[in-house]
Length: 261
Length: 217
Image (cartoon, rainbow over all chains, first blue to last red; front, side, top):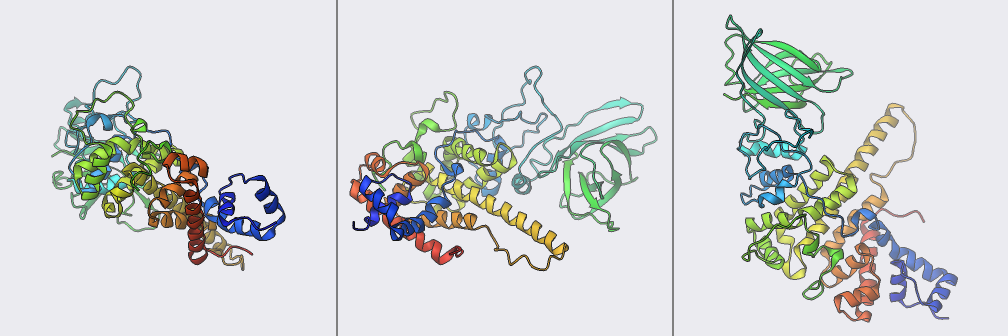
């Protein structure tokens, strides 16, 4: 019998069943089978379930649009309802400087797991967010005024996690009766092996910085150098430092927040 | 590809029925239709990016989540898809197909990119380990997995296809339709569908033979 038509072999490459006589010939002809195999390489390359369409739609969290807007500079925004369908509660105490209308931080339903001082954002967003005039970085900042034994708290800032690192927490500036200041830090982060966390106060353009010391997961207090203007160094930064004897910032920040001036 | 995907084609995501809006989000009568959104998108109208996101982000993200599970990786893919689509909008031709189908194609690229990146990292890590162990010869490992490289090449080449070839082969590849179903769906004659499929597979084969890794004989 003659060889299969080229079109039929292409269909065979797509795993379509062939008419009986074509199928019979293919079974007995090495040339035709070889042709099918060579055409099949591209078919198989993209035959993965992940590429199949359509997928079940899943509304992305609002942070995805924020990242797109930041990266493209587009000021138009999807309607709020398209953004509201986030798979996580919006961060509470958001300073309303986000570039799009976010769902207001309404009362969470009873028992809902609202984690006020945590925020999950894709890496890209954190990079892009710098272009939005720090709108995101300082978003978790809230000011509180309380008086306790340790002095007067003048400001509290959420330390939002950066990138994939599961580190977050809060930092509180307190002024003691004698006028000295301290930074009380509560860090929620995994223990490190062969590295350590360090806490820094950094100026907004991230050039000059003051190290406050080594910080471990949990609550600790750091002395703020007398005379240091926190308005000039408003960024509270937690870095991971290798044990390499180099006193400078590793460049690897895992959590960050900005003090309100 | 006027006509090819003018009818609802669930497989290529041109359908409003699978948009991200889970509930009744009433739209005003002034809302542009999908084709108009596509034209404005191509023309650089920022509002069209927002509208495209409203309508199709759920679909794109659904693909990303299916590939990577919910979380930062999928969110990165969705984000990158829209950023890339916007910055590369000159490559989108509204007369060649609906915008959601094109976004779906961009999303596949981003998924394949992410896989390739992971593969590269894994290989670099393995290479570092084997170097540390001073294993004298493991043969020179190819830079990237053949299947992963092939996948990127095929996706690339698909983008270069005109219509109706691209729509036809995408229905065969991604919607798993037979050539008879494609003919029925698109209204293109059976014989034409078959010859387009043949020529497209030849073209993809050539691309893989020229740019892809040589397969073991």
